[in-house]
Structure formats: structure tokens, C-alpha cells
Length: 483
Image 1 (cartoon, rainbow, N blue to C red):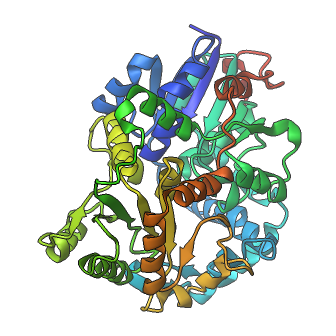
Image 2 (cartoon, rainbow, N blue to C red):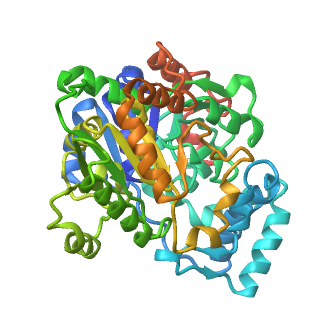
């Protein structure tokens, strides 16, 4: 057995595609035992997919219910980590998130406002948390009560050197693992699975030895919001896109080709109805169907990919569009849209299907924004963000705060945005007619999101192995015994 352990934190299925792909595992294997800490560790299908890569599994269970006051202190800790972060940077790009602090989004605009007491608590937490160390001070009071795990300590005490690799900056699992990392001196590395981790998820969970930014926007967040030094920032690029590259290299049929005689494909990607009203999404679909009936979009096939993970939601959509000849329904893959549910299907198969579905599209329209749009742009597809909403829900949520003075989105200035359905149809027409402009647009969108270094595997390996954390000069068993 190695003296070194690499823990890959996989709290949900979407993180699995980033940290448990062949590209990442090949970069890390050889000089350490690799263990995936995940709630899916005991799932046989999950194990069979990754055990061949030399990965071990450690089950992470939900935090046990705890009595007061630890439960309240944990809530306060999370509020001082997030709400205070929004207050601190409310005039530096996070004004929208600060405006939403006391609001809870409901499906299709059925939002609620926090009760007075909770609003007062959040206000106090947002002030106290202006000191970055406030939430960690609270964690010190509750950590032993809330986070300690006998099975996890039995795992780590076998090793002298431990590196924790995280992809997310939220949730109970990563709070727990980061608590251990801070208190026992693990080496820590962040490989974000989405840009939210460095942008809007609050103060970072660790003082990371290495933060592996995907592109320019994440680097800006790392510097401007988290004040990271050059020595801790690694221009890694997107590990997910490198996985896409490898999948496409192994499947030449996935390389995009243009045939002027084939039907063009317009793919509409929906989002959760908590973030974009389903009625407005339906109106956009209806407008596209009407435009296609009038031959405004040429020889085009429409595909609707709603974010509908539950049977009742899918039934509603099938009832509305199931018999519509001018549109094809496409359901999202669990590995790309799901978080905590895992039905047992092979993740690699789902990812291949996901890329196949995207590479067939010529233009992708998304309700609001979704990471699927960035994936489509990486594959050379024209992308449009649809903010058309006649229900007024987005206006009530002050969505205008997401836009810069020049009308571009705060996090993606090169992403085309429409606010009306006529604008949407017109832009789709333009993108379908000009393939060269569409390709250039896709490249511009991706430019801020992926450094694409030629040596990304070596960069990742160096970030993870690095120099030893100074506290880990004796066996971890000794450290834990004295803790």
C-alpha cells in the first residue's frame, strides 16, 4: 500500500464526469492510492464503472441529525460563508445575488420571502461574515460534534500524506471533508466542475494549495473575490472538455460535418422551472414551431430537451408536445443533469449519448443559461440565451441586475441574449444561414472558459502531488490520535 492517499470528493453525479474520467485518473495514478469519497460508493454499477481504473471507494453518508445548538451554529456558519460574501462584493459583480438573499425561488415564480427573524439573522450574518474567518471560527465550535466520522478516520490513518481534491464549493460532504483537511493538514486542490464554485458559492472551503482554473473568467474570480496568489493558481483548463476531446477522438463519427442537403437542427434546452417559468419556455417552443411551419428556418428539425427529471413533469410535456410532428422530445441524461439520483446506468454511455445529441445541433437555444450551452459552443454550435418572459417573473426577480451596462451577461459577455420572441426567431435565422459566423461566435464564447493547455495532465499531476503539507510529517494515525 502507498503512503500517499488522494481523496477525490464526488458528492453528486455531475462531479463524477469531471473527477472520475480516464483523462484525470491517468494523470494521477501511479504513486498514490486513489479513493472516491461519494454517497454512491456502495452502488455496484458505480463501482463497476470505475474500479477498473484503480479507484477505491469510501461511502459518505448524510450528516447525522444533531441537537441544538450545533445545528443552529452550522446554519450560521453557512450563512456567514455565503451571504456575507454577497454583501462584500455586491458592488463588484454580485449585486443580483445580494438582492436575492432573502428570497426563496419556487417553481414558476411561486417565490417566498424569508420571515422577519430569518431576514434579521441573515443581515447579522452578512455583517459578521465580512471577516472571512468568521464561518471557520463557528466550524471550530461544532466540527467535532458534526463532522467527525469513525470510518473516514479509519481510512486516512493508514497514510502519511493525503491530498483532498474537490470539484465543488458547497454541500455537507465538502464542508465535512474540508474541515478534516484544514484541521489535519491535508494538501488541498480545487478543480471546479462549474464556474459557480469560484464565482457565487461563497468563501472557499479551504486555503487551497492549488486552484485549477478552467479559463479567464474563473481566474478573474479567483483573484478578485478570493485574492488568490499567482503561486496557487493553475491554468488547467477544463477537465470536462479534455474528456470530450478524448471521447470524440475515440468516436470519429462525433466530429461535426456540414451537409447543405441535410436538415439543420435547432435544439432548445430547458432549465428547472424554479429558475425559468415553464410557460415562457413553452411560448418559445411554440414560436419556433410556428416559424418552422412558415418555413422561416429553412429545412430545419426542432428538438426540445426540457429539464424534466420527474415522471409527472415529463407527462405534462408529452401531453403538450408528444403528438406534435414538428418537434422531437429529448430527455436529459442523468450523468449530465442529475445530482443525487443515480439509477445505475453506465455514466460513460450517458456521456457519449450527451455529446452525440449536442454535436447534431446547429443552433442551441437555452432558457436563461445552463452549462449545456457552453458545452454546445465547445462543440461548434451556435448558442443563444433566451430571457423572453411575458409572465414577468424574471423582472420581479430583478434579473436585469445580471446584465452589464452594454447589455451583455455578467459572466459571458460574448453570449448572444434575446429578450423577445421575435428577436429569438430572427437570431436563429441568422445563425442557421451563416455557418462561418456561427463557428466564430462559438469560439468566442468558449475563449473565456477554457485555457486548453497542451500539458494539462502534467499540470494536474503537479497540482495534486505538489510539496507535502508541512503538518504531514508523521503518520496520520498519530495526528488523529492526538486530535
